[in-house]
Length: 181
View: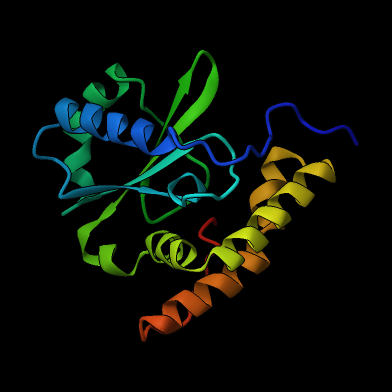
């Protein structure tokens, strides 16, 4: 099976954090006072970690219904609603030049402190050996010709293992990382 040109893992780019800050500024300007918090999550938020070149952001709001009146402003800034089967959030995707560049996960504030993506990011920042292990798996998945739609599922076992450790470090019980219906 040929390697999909759209699914690629790149060495860490030190410009990714700047791109995240720029996007956060755009989002806050587009929807003033909507977001209680916005953070850079995912592999591009972990220094040294190889990743798909897509900036993942997570934003907290008191209630997901509060986003609806701001949706036109998000779209005007390139963040379009997207349904990928996740049921506990709103998802927006930005594609620059037709290529996905950013994903915005909007979640409720009440679960913010225990969001797996934030907890795993922080764990990988503190454990570069585990980040390297994760990067190796991602490269192997892509080299095997895994289709973009199967990529997340192919890395779920390791992500679950690492997230369980990260949650245990914080005194939290394990929780499934697979969030799609």
